[in-house]
Length: 243
Image 1 (tube, rainbow, N blue to C red):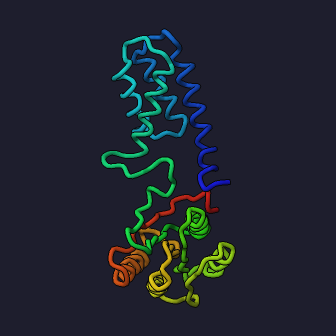
Image 2 (spheres, rainbow, N blue to C red; image 1 turned 90 degrees about the horizontal axis):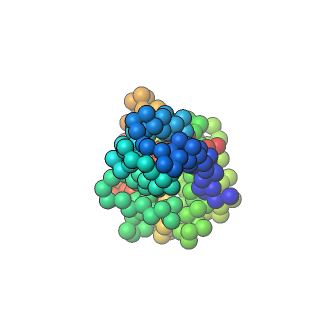
Image 3 (cartoon, helix red, strand yellow; image 1 turned 90 degrees about the vertical axis):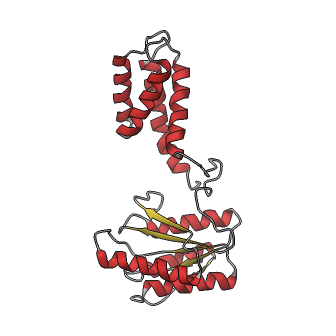
């Protein structure tokens, strides 16, 4: 199963609900009045869509079809296009929807350094392995750095994944300064000429000031060894792909 297959499967349910709501609520020949639009707004929210996104979609539909008799397919097309706009964001979009790696800010000269952060237990380490696997399948060489020197068996876990992926990993003993691991990882990536270096970090909450300062130190140390790095910082919120 591909990296995004599970996500696509989960979103298919929402897509089916959306399309059914459009078809059932806005039957051919029905006048799209405020009552129908309010009912449609409630239906969007029941699909776990945020209130702001649902409101934007309803306003787009209102502006194009309000007070008119419409065809469900025409409304559905407007809903799809508005969703795409919301997901891609405003302004200059560099996301190629056919390439899952395109949102990443890859360096013009290798190595690209990716720093992975997040709270405890959300699936950072295994997600790193999945990302590394995808990068390898895309023809890129990968190096891992086990920067989580705090959690028990964190280094061993990432080492296991590196073994399965047959990629190099930089480690230091448990309790080592994570910034030193990050520095060593970037240094090794430069030395070996790999395309991407992915650095793991210990779980932390933003309310833990000392741990946030530690993260700032990691950033400074990486940038000192390779100006402009880390090129991408990924915040793992709830990685069901990783757990």
